[in-house]
Length: 185
Image (cartoon, rainbow, N blue to C red; front, side, top):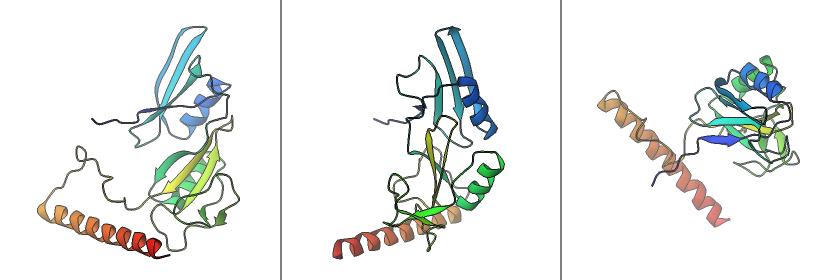
C-alpha cells in the first residue's frame, strides 16, 4: 500500500504573521478556513512540493516554534540561499556537516560552505519562521536509487529513457562504492 506524506502541522502563535511569512516566501495559499472563533486552519504549499504545511487555532497542542528539522529539498543550495535572503527568511550561510552526508542537529558539526565535492545530499542551509520553527534546505542534485515516482516520471524518447537509466546505473555504482568503503572502515 502506498503512503504519501501530504500535510505537516507547524505550531505557531500568530496565524496571520505565519501566513504572511510563508506566502512571502512564495508558498501557495491553499486554504484559510475558520468555522468559528475556536477553529481556524491555514494551509500553504512550498513551490513544487506535493506536501503542504498547516497551522492555525485548535490544530495542534504542540508548543509554537517546537517543530524542528523540517526539510525542503532544493537543486541549487546557493540559489536557494539568495532567494530566501531576498524574500526575508534570514537563512544561515550554506554549510555541510563534519560527519558527511546528513547533518547533526544543532550547529556544532556545521562546516562553512557547501560540501567540498558538491555531493548530492551534502549541502544545507537553515532558517526559522517567526515562531522559531526550524527549516533546513538540503541540496539534492541526483536521487539515490528508488526515489523516483513512476506515476510522475515520463520520458519523451527512447534516448531520454536510456540516458536516465545510465544516470541511475552510475548513481547506483557510486552508492555501492561508498557503502563498500564504509564497510571496509
